[in-house]
Amino acid sequence: MKKLILLLLVVGYSTISSAQDKINWVSLEEALELQKKSPKKIMIDVYTVWCGPCKMLDKNTFQNQDVADFVNKNYYAVKFNAQGNSTINYQGKTFSNPGYDPAKAQRRNATHELARAFKVQAFPTIVFLDEESNFITPLRGYQKPQQLELYLKLFKDDDYKNMKSQEDFNTYYTAFKPTFKG
Image 1: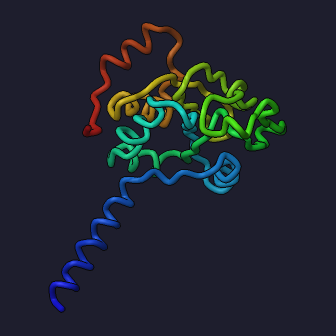
Image 2: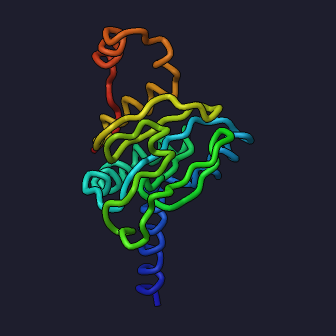
């Protein structure tokens, strides 16, 4: 009996600790509603189902404990399939994917109008929105935890607003000291 209880405790603890490694993903509509109650920036993972680097970003970066903790505390996190078939209302406009082909649901498909509006040109791309859901910028390509940390903190603290040139960014980049593990 003691072994069974111990086993249940170990399984329960490992389930709880692995759940803590997870980012709390919501839909864009949910994030926009949450912003009305408690303003935070929004981080959108723009991915496709066929994209290898998108899957690496999920596995290696978004499941990193430091990344998950920081994102959950400071952002509303959204996953958005850039070649999916959803209809999304954003800033008074309705976005869809009129060229979507259900037969291609698991491979390359037409690009969603919202991905174009967010200036997404490659996958994965992480799009950042401010507390009022205004577009900040897209961040293209696979990011390791420490690489993403730079941008998560740059946008969270609004440091990007003080940057007027590449030289300003280079100074910020040089002074940045990553703390995320992995």
